[in-house]
Amino acid sequence: FISVATGIFVLMPCCARPILLLNYWLAISLALHPSSAPFHTVQNIRPALGTCFRNGFTSCSGRSGIQLRGGSSTGDSLVSIVLRFLDKRFFLVGVVSTIGLAALVPQLGVQGGLLRPELTVTWGAPCGIFLISGLTLPTSQLTAAAMKLRTHAAIQVFNLGIIPGVMLLLCSGLMRVGLISRATRDGLLVMAALPTTVNMCVALTRSAKGSEAIAIFNAVLGNLLGIAVSPLLILYLIGRTGAIPMASVVVSLLQKVLVPLVAGQCARTVAVVARMAGDHKTELSRISESLLLLTIFCTFCKTFSTGFGLPASTIAALTLLVSLSHISFLALAWAISRPLCPAERVAFMYSATHKTLALGLPMLQIVFYGRADLALLCTPLLLQHPLQLLIGSLFAPRLATLVEEMDEKM
Image (cartoon, rainbow, N blue to C red; front, side, top):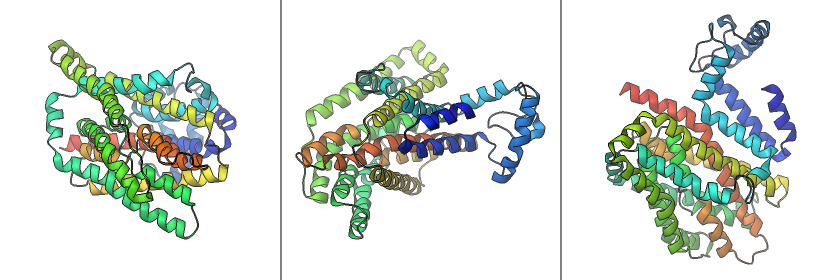
């Protein structure tokens, strides 16, 4: 693991190394037993490794004091411990691996590459995710979720009201003290005025054991509202606006969300299909997570291969600003949604904080057509897209554990 991690780190572009180090640190931290204090854990790593070396990496003695989540340290073979860890932390390990692989071979996931993301990510991933949702979600859950009007209203107000308002205050303050330029401010405000993602928030909610039905409903509702609300918000925030092509948005939602979702629901009416979907829910969930990992891989492939055309210092500053603001909005959404049950809070947190690249990039190109600094204007949204995937993926395993613990108590 150390050899592979070091190789990936050396070969990765300098601007991406801090993200990789953060991934490594989080993955190792989550692997260690949560009850172990940090210094106690570090002191016990060396004897644990010594035990493994002495035994030829066939077993690790329980005397070492290290334990992996989901398994006992006593008498277990190293292979079984690793397999249990990979099974329990499949998504987290997948995120780390896909980012490292994207840095090594970005040509695999760019448009026209071997994986053909223009087909697999643009069409295959969202259709597959919503087909699986339709197969595994009982119709009663979707109907019950549709009736939670207050929850839906709160999510949309947060996404299209609170985030733009807070971002306006933040950007005004930063611009007043000379920390950001007007172009950066405009790019951040346009990003804040966009609706939530179509499939990303649903896939992350599913991975974190949240209320998938609420996430689906708000993914559709948010993008439909965004057709009318986002141009008005942009006009208010920066004084310029552009029209979102309503027909293409509606057709895309129908083709990528509603059609596969309804197809899955129709298939559930067949008793054999419903029973098989229930029996293989874990495997279907793993397929859904794998489709999201494919999206993450291709997203970072494009990021590593094309770059942003801006100085590294500008990219680093914007990355820090976008990351901190997104984490802050995640924390605020989690705090506001306290009255909801844990599964609904997860859906609220992801659905209310995501921003869509599919609608945002065309909007930026329409609003700022002819601007010489168009690359800088688009950079906040281009950074937000992979960062919300990465940050949301890192939170998903812990949120899933929290939801499972609360379900057991109830």
